[in-house]
Length: 79
Image 1: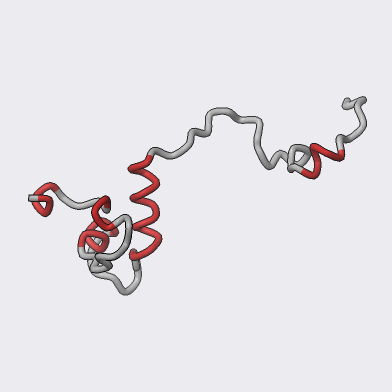
Image 2 (image 1 turned 90 degrees about the horizontal axis):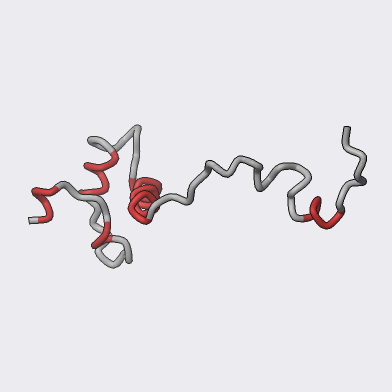
């Protein structure tokens, strides 16, 4: 039983609803994971695209994208 009144400041920040979560097992994604996720979100087409998401990202032609040199590519394409 909670005997403390609700905290209006905490509620405004999402603490009452559990927005921030009490589970501390969630880790921030790695930089590689974040880059892979962004490239996949940008170019991957599971319906009309050919190949896996990695193959589609390797075939990316947006050379002026700041993530282009960091996009996931196979070892043989790196040279």
